[in-house]
Amino acid sequence: MKRVVVGLSGGVDSSVAAYLLKEQGYEVIGMFMINWHNTTGTLAGDCPWSDDLIFAELVARKLDIPFRTIDFSKEYGKRVVDYMFGEYQKGRTPNPDVLCNREVKFDLFAKAALELGADFVATGHYCRKETIEKNGVEIHRLLAGTDPSKEQSYFLCQVNQQQLSKALFPIGHLYKSEIRQIAREQGLATAEKKDSQGICFVGKIDLPSFLQQKLQAANGLVIEIDKTSTHNPVPIRPNLGNNFSDDELDAFARHPFYSKNMGKIAGEHAGAHFYTIGQRKGLNIGGRPEPLFVLSTDVVENIVFVGQGHDHPGLNRYGLFILENDIHWVRPDLEMHIGEKRFCHVRIRYRQPLQRACLYKTVKGLYILFEEPQRGITAGQFAAWYNNDELTGSGVID
Image (cartoon, rainbow, N blue to C red):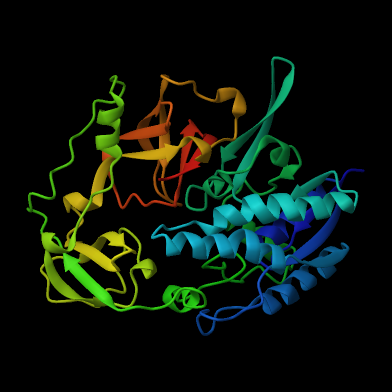
């Protein structure tokens, strides 16, 4: 009998994952990860991990499976939270959930599971895995989940073949409504429990309060940039598949540059590193015919640049760039060569509909040009590319 360790999070998805695996004949062990103790910045009423632990224990008892807890808080702090603080300090916006999967769930957790003699580790992610053979070598494909409203392959865009070889995703073929129904039928304590929100293992937070643990607040200016300004040329649509010089690719992917004298003072803020491109809430500036969005931040001069409207040229562009060292191939056999271009679909944030795009591989790294302009392309976030429903690679946006 194959042994599988399931990451029981105290939510309905992992609960049903454990149930399904037991029904399939696996020897199932439930394991709960404690990854964060500090409640600074978490919002009042947010469910702390201690409550999740109780739910996880109840599910394990109901399913009659062994249950363990393991504390990764020290490692999580170093690998995920410290990285997060560092990125915000540089004026970038990280995605801690992607890092949590790469560094904790499919690394530390998987190693702990293997020490228990597990053949596999399983999670409640809405994604699927398929194993094929190519030139005599086993290849593991990371596929999108069936439920389009819950599809979570994006969060696993940094896992590798070794990690996938030991991973099982028991609920990836199901819809959320089906998960709830199974949980009700089996009398699982999590059947009606609300889905968790916010940062993986930290919870829903007030970002400025959370970041002020390590990043000091400092008052600075909010500068409004007019959308008709000559500093805001309308982005030019690329003809996808054409050959472009490196300079042309750079022009499509370049972040807008603003300085203090390009606009007018619209207000003040408490620290440029607390804001991210595309952000609307938290500016506390009204009296405009259209909503204000963050266009850019300057953490050196401590300035936040904003503009009105979804169609502001500074908020939309057709391209992005990923440095060579930040490119990750879930499918190394599909890695691109210098000078190669490839059509695919890309998303730059969770739940974003897939966007038609073309990848261009150069000596410096990877350029991605889109068929339609993308709003709020943000340094530090992950771009993930797909071939049909398979996620084949990803990278950190520069």
